Image (cartoon, rainbow over all chains, first blue to last red; front, side):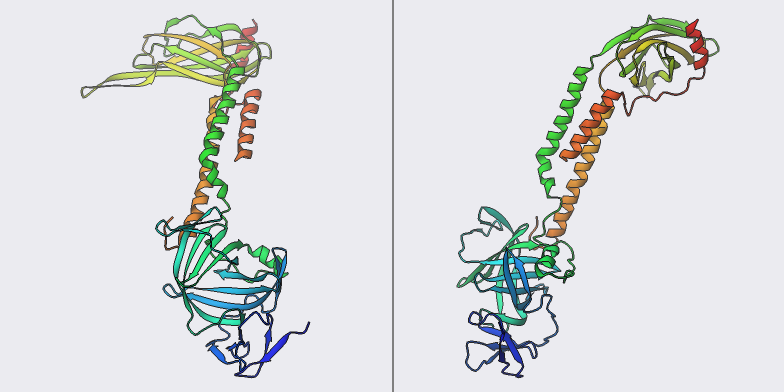
Length: 416
Length: 42
């Protein structure tokens, strides 16, 4: 179908009309004059001062498919906040059956906006929020907007220096906007439109804009972090429950309890002692070798050798205890312990011998010790490591979520 | 997070079954292991 055109009243250039009968203003692309379509003489209402200052990011007449419907771009409006002087662009789209929609571009981000016919929102001005369709929108920005540039057609009468009060409320990815004064208010509902969706909708090769920063309505990619309030304790509980079940499945068994031995050192070396044989019935199993001493302001350090006579495997480790105490400036102090425990992982089943060869300070004093070997139980170190990993991941995820929200609200007049 | 928890639980169970304790004492070569093996067999 051929596009209807009219001649510009000022420059005579052909001006296409894409929504004839619905729109009342049209701007001449050639000279920037805004013509009154309701006037038989097409009088000039406005004159864009710099017609090339705002090249269209979406070409007039270009079509897209959104919400399963074909839309045609028929107008471009550039608006400016009178207080902060930032600008944004609003593209008017038209479908003969479904009417008008807006694509609003700010900082390279896009929002798909539909004007709401009936206001059924609950306004809570003091709390800075709006409840609309069961969703609470929080106040993000309010001010006065002035139209600084127009291109194409519009369905309302433009006048020079159009300025209107507006307020934006957000519930990402949605936006609730109110424009106008007490006499006439326009309410619209917007939804963040990723540039990828825009590119696909218009069949473009690449995005017409490069989004900068975080848009007020941009979905937080870390929004599942909000569930961590209940999910994190739940996961910790599950981890603990699993560990306790494992602990129940691995009962503790004392497989060796030695006699208490008292001996004097010879040049700092205690006589070697061998314990066993003792049986480890089921493996691999966690094994704890516990040393009990009566060290008193002294130390003992055993080189321990655990020999599996079934497999002829040998495990060697140190087992030491030191305990010091005294009084300093009237205050008693102590450090160390007369006990020591070594945890061995994955001990195979078999018949074992344990040999201890001790070293002490060479002073010929008597030293007493006893050893116990207990098998079974769970590796709590593994559990704590799992808890640390889970906590770190949850913590980092939550920080990223918060960081995104801080960026979102950085440009708002209202704090989070 | 759920996936991470499943992996961690799997590692807990596997560590227990295979006898892997990340903070358990590492075995090291004994200075006189060979000597002692002979000793035990006497």
